[in-house]
Length: 118
Image (cartoon, rainbow, N blue to C red; front, top):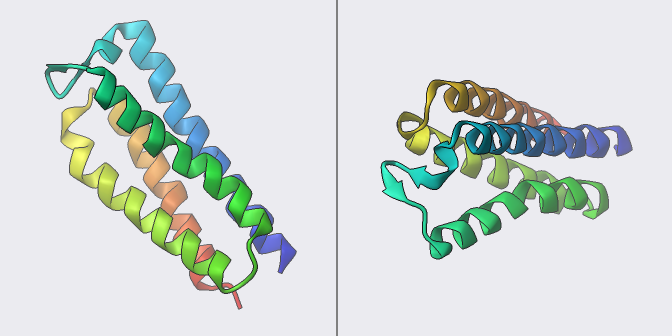
């Protein structure tokens, strides 16, 4: 049972690092100043900060929550991220799309591991 917790935590860390690398590339390319063609506001940055906390919190919760709450928290959070990324995929440059697809792969693995956890 502990092995699944570790796998889930590592998948959330991989997801977070994928998002972080996308953010670094956005800063380097200058794409970080606009989102979907609009100037990024402080409120938008706050929303982004809150969203980016989810994978970090899930990495920790995956290790400390007990089954079945752990299982369902991972399934729900990962499905949320898959849906969120699918809805926003078209608004990003190509390098971000590649990273978002990779993160959705990590999220799909998270759902698979959590779903098959017995």
